[in-house]
Structures are given as structure tokens and as C-alpha cells.
Image (tube, rainbow, N blue to C red):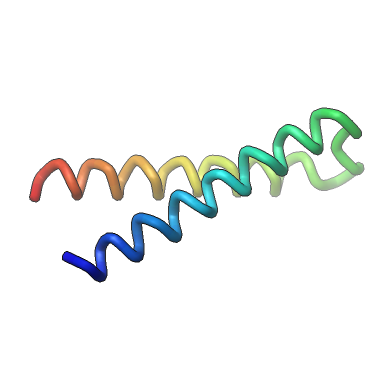
Length: 59
């Protein structure tokens, strides 16, 4: 399970970094053409965190 803990830590760091990026972009505005890819990235990170949490609850 140690390997899973490492993955969990990495995903949590990515999620925290994504939150910080979102706040920074909100302060300065989204550059033209970056809105769609940024939203897709935020959804992908959220999906990854949710999937990991569900997997941990099952085990």
C-alpha cells in the first residue's frame, strides 16, 4: 500500500497546484485561447482525485 500512498500524495500535490493556478488565473484573467484547455485540465485533475478516493474506500 506504500506505493498507493505515494500516488495519493502526488495527486494531492497536483490538485493543490491546480487550485493555486486557478486562483492566480482568476486574479489576472485567462489568456485568450487558454480557457477551454484549462477547464479540461481542471476536470481531469478532479476526476483523478475522485477516482483515487473511490479506489481507496473500496480497499
